[in-house]
Length: 171
Image 1 (cartoon, rainbow, N blue to C red):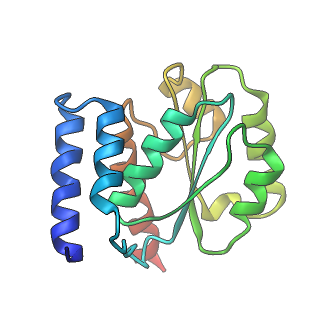
Image 2 (image 1 turned 90 degrees about the vertical axis):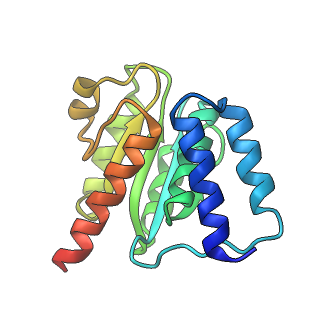
């Protein structure tokens, strides 16, 4: 299957998921099966996206990783129960343009520490930052310093991609 056909099928599955006609786990499994044996070519303009989870929230992490990949990002998935230092190390790669965090609690001091460390390392300004999970509201995302926020993973990825492409066009 060529890249165009693969992408067409992925978008079809993504639309089914987005409109509630395909459950999360079936969506993820279907995309993995579809990609089996295929080489997925990321869009070089989009760079890398680091996707991490605090509090073992791996379903949200995996969902964001899959949608980012479908939309053309080169995705780096951090391990389960990511530590701040591990995420910082991944984000030091100059090709990283996006950081998505998946969390399950509204008060997560790791997020505050992570954002502070990104600033100290001088890399926060080049990264589009997004945070999601069931307890995350617009207010919480704003307080954490997120660049984009949406109530669904699909919409979040669309906003992230738009933001990254705007930054690329300015350069």
